[in-house]
Length: 72
Image 1 (tube, rainbow, N blue to C red):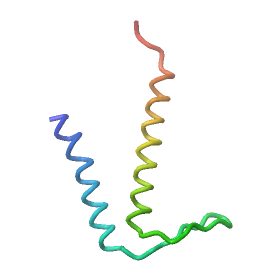
Image 2 (cartoon, rainbow, N blue to C red):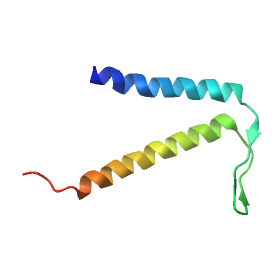
Image 3 (cartoon, rainbow, N blue to C red):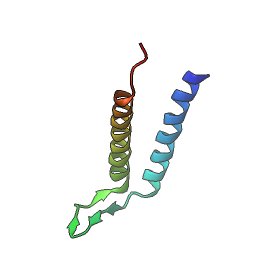
């Protein structure tokens, strides 16, 4: 059951991202304070944000496990 969930959850997210990307194909630009990015399709921005979130989550898990004392 655990392996099914590990496969099903990312698959649902990928399908949802694909549907949202196809429905919103217009280019967007991100603005932060005085900085502005080049215009990219919404699907590309969404994919980069999802990938960055996965990387940061993996780093956070690795750091969290590294701080816990080992039980030996």
